[in-house]
Length: 339
Ligand SMILES: *Cc1c(COP(=O)(O)O)cnc(C)c1O
Image 1 (cartoon, rainbow, N blue to C red):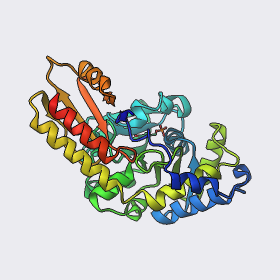
Image 2: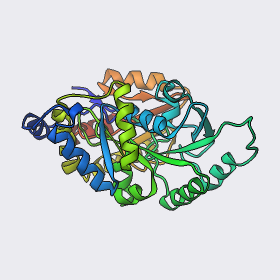
Image 3: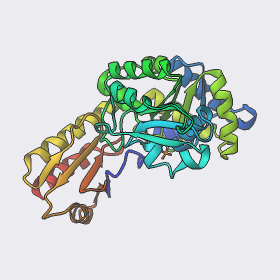
C-alpha cells in the first residue's frame, strides 16, 4: 500500500464517518430543506461566534465567493505573494471578480501590519485601483504550514478597518493553527469579516468547505454560490461527514503535528538534507543536496511506495494526515534515515 504524503486531502472517510453519512437525513438544500446541511451551517456559525455559514463543495469556491462579495471589478485585493487565492485558484480572482492582487513580500506566507500599511499608502488618485480587501491564509500552505501570530493579526485588522478594507481569512487549515497555538474559533470569528474553512483537509471529510460571515454577507454568498454552480441538492450526505469531522477530528490534529516533528528530527539528522523550513503543524518542506536533486529524490521514494510532492525551486513537501498510520510512520522514518 502507498504511503501517500502528497497532501492531507488524500484521506478517505473512516468507517464511523461513513456510518454517519449513511444515517444522514437529507432534503433539497437549494430550498434550504436539508436538515443536515442546516445543522452543519448552524454548528459552524456557532463555533466561530459568527451570524451565518454556508456549505460549499470546495475551498476554492468558498474563497472565490468571498472575494466576489467583497469587491467590484477593478478593485484590488491585498495578500501575501504565497497566497492560495493568488497562486492556486486558477486565476479565479481575475476571472470571477475582475480584481487585481497586490502581493506583499512576506515571510513563509505571512506579512506584518507595517507591510500592510506600506502596501496601502502612497498615491490614491484616479490612476490607482481601489484597495478593498485583505486576505490572510492560516496556516499558510506554500509557507509550509506556518501559523500567524495572533497579535499581528489584530494589528492588521485594525489597519484594515481604519482604511475601510474588508478582512477575509482563507482558513483551509485553520484548525491546524488553532490546535498548534491553542487558540479558539471565536477569536478568529471576532477578527474577520469572512472565514473559509476546509473539512476535506486535515479534518478528513471527503468533500466540503464552509464560508462564515454576517447574515448580509452570507445571503450575498448564497447568490454567488448559485451562479458559480455550487448550489447542491441532497448534500446532507456530505454535510454529515463534515459534522462528524468537526465533532471528532479536531483534537487529533495534534498527532499529525507530532509525526511532522518526528519526521523533521530525522531530516535534520541526515546529511543529504540541506535545509528544512520550520515545522509548526502538519506540513514539512525541505531541500535535498543538489547532487541528488528533488525530482530524483521523489522518484526514488516512489519506488518504495512513498509519495511526496515537489514544490518548485528544489523544495519537497510532506504532509501528515489522518490516514498516515503509526506503521507507515515507522517505515517512512526508516527509509528517510537509510536513504
Ligand atoms: C486547499 C486549499 C484551499 C481550497 O482548496 P480546494 O481544493 O478548492 O478545496 C484554499 N486555500 C488553501 C490555503 C488551501 O490549502
